[in-house]
Length: 554
Image (cartoon, rainbow, N blue to C red; front, side, top):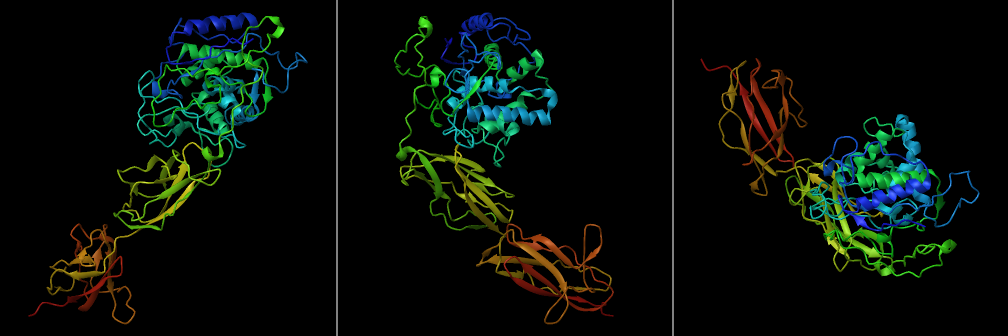
């Protein structure tokens, strides 16, 4: 018979005493278990380590499930022939979820053997945080069929954590929410996220990625999890609550006594997750922390052994498959044209994607995250590099205006269905340098200098593009030879670089806001004659200027 406390509790809720009594009952019925390293009394007193702030723990102290293990636990492996190898008993862990925990243990054993991470600790945390990914509702890659999101951490009954990921993981650009089967807040995932299934992505909604990240997080600070004090500190660093620690410890002890694998999707789901509904509120809403899910009436089975009044059915309620018209099947380019812009200008084309259901029709209310990637300073309107929006009734959503920065070249914009495992839609954008189609001197003074002296008058030019001022245009200045194919001259007038060396070509020159460029000082060597200075702009505009080196008249 399971001792069920099927409530989602807030941090510091008043049922701590009930949980403590239940843990005591577990200890009495199960024999010696894991003993807390220290205990400051009832409630959420600090028990081990220093008290972190809400946003310094992995989950942001988000709510968790307080269901406790059955009072009768499975025997240790090998101690009984009655231990099931399949089925839906409480001790069963869905196949992909169990594989993820064990793979994470093996990975950390090879990279941080001193931590001694047991996979049963990951299983205990996974049970408390998400009911083992909602009973193992994951695809073949270990990604949840829909995102597991905690409530909005807006300070209304929960911690106050302002947005740290621009909504990339949780679909909320105002506040953060815990994400995935191990319930990481985005800022923690940004630091600890892992690629546990080697698919090139770090996805908090993937059980392999999340389990490995949780393992690394628990092992932080040179912890040895075979020591009770270090294990307590690790669990409290995940969610700083005595009640949380006791609940995780009870499941940890339960799983150490024995467990078995069940098919994905058939694991036992906490009552507050039961009934086939998605507990994650819509990203745009702030759920009430006290509104419990309505229980689904279940037929009462016969009492095992004639003494149980537990109404829990022998198999979990089946979840009806989503309708094809409501199932996201694909995200595709909705006719976005070529993305090109001159540095500093807005891209004329807007990025647009379309969400399709399993029937090929449009799907509304799909959260889509647009991310600018690559070596670029291009940004969406408002200076953002990540934007999350929702598709409309026609299944499409258009990203904000994209504005080019000063960095030229190509970069990528990716559109993904937020929290889903669908392939991203990638767009290549190109930023070209500012151009000028004309360049000319701003005066017509003769430019002369005596041998070995400097030219008294500076060279100043102005660039235009289609008659308008061309600011920020790159210009190259070169002293050239005569002839049909001019080359850089090795004698005559020259510039000086920052070290005072002679140079006859200058790059990285740019026109100012008025389209004007004033060249550095020009010097004459000892060779008299008439020489040519050529200025060329990005865009192909050219002007050739004469420089004369001659001795002053007697």
